[in-house]
Amino acid sequence: MRIDIITVLPEMLEGFFNESILARAQKKGLAEIHLHNLRDYTLDKWKRVDDYPYGGSAGMVMQCEPIDRCIAALKAEREYDDVIYVSPDGETFNQKIANEMSMQGNLIILCGHYKGIDQRVRDHLITREISVGDYVLTGGELAAAIISDAVIRLVPGVISDEQSALSDCFQDDILAAPIYTRPADYKGWKVPEILLSGNEAKIRQWEFDQAMERTKRLRPDLLK
Image (cartoon, rainbow, N blue to C red; front, side, top):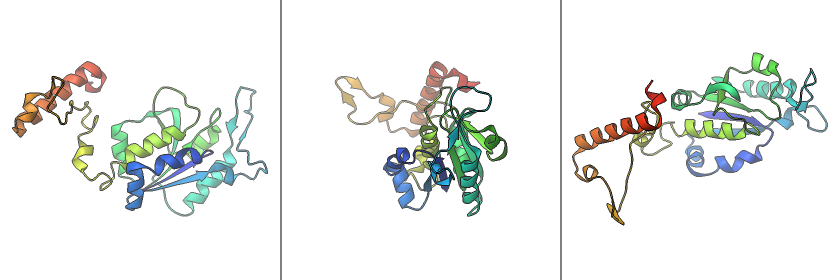
């Protein structure tokens, strides 16, 4: 899959996408991540991409023209499944959305800044708005990184053990069961005996029971 991220701070994301699983996904040719500096698409000699809002309210607003020019340039080269704007008032990102997006081919993610973007961009260019939580960030870069990470790790072949991804939290709308590794006894803190029994059926049942108990206790909203 390919993700094009439009941002005024590409250097903020370069390190993130060049490490760990995301770097390996790109080296394997399973994912492409391209960062586009929005300032390269403005005609302003000072490379400004924002201006004062009409109506006299506080803050600065990202302008239509550079965003439109950037998206148009990308669309001239290929088709996109979605043009996403990361925004506090978008639909809340979750594992279901990540699963859905991992099946798509090409995505554009627009990172907001300042007070936000001109509403006409949202009305005419954006096809989906996504929030990573009910709070406000300085810019959309961290949200774009979160979405890209969650989506790309689900692309077949990115994680060598695909069953590991399928057993993550939220895949079945419940939290994951507790996990343990060696040693079996550390300072008297012992691994549950069932996990050492070798009885796979009983272990799977224990994991399900534990997952349900944790979900009921920590995130009962998921069971609704």
